[in-house]
Length: 313
Image 1 (spheres, one colour):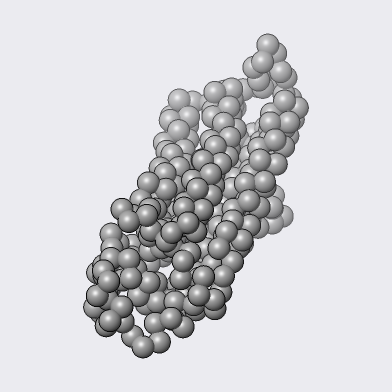
Image 2 (tube, rainbow, N blue to C red; image 1 turned 180 degrees about the vertical axis):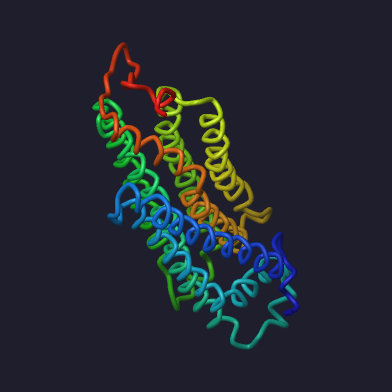
């Protein structure tokens, strides 16, 4: 272990241990998700590979790419952290090639952060297109779905541009200023705007399943199970907020390790959330029954289904 691997708020050992753990859980979750949906559920209901499945799989691919890239720059990232926490004396004992190492790190970090964000985007799209199949006969909810989709696309484009353009200096001395000074203030301001927009877009997505829970006739046990599953979304939002709170350290410097660590955790939790078995099997069951009894009516803002799910044998 390097002399600067324990500097900062997240040590290198803790970074790797926790991200590897959640990465393994994410891969296992997606594997179980597809195994159950196609071996036990899809084959009995519908055989086509749907958009929500495609986005989930693509999200995992982006996460795998980002996780692979992490091992190419994690040492350089902690070297960069040493300049923040190691004090002025650290520059005297830094490796002779530290500047080139930092330049390489800036480039690889940008690519990795973009991949992580693409993974998060895919999670959002997977959930949205999954919910779309459940509300496609409800005009008002479909309008809300389109607004939510548009909002998430706008936020996603903004974040990708932010990573690419807010400090676009590679193999340039200005790259050394990306985490401190006026450039750090710019990154912090744009990141806070990103997180606020991200949280709001997440909450817009949450409204759709909450609407379904409230309106569809189902047992309270089913609703309770779904509400419990939605707690994962609240955790997802909470992790995003934690990432923003610790982004700036006392000397007005961006903590690159903190930002990267919590973005990895966010992406991994997102994949786990999107592939949750209990979360989706409830809706698949509801969809199967609605296809058997496809009569929907909107009366006084409520949904009536004939016959109800609770009455179905």
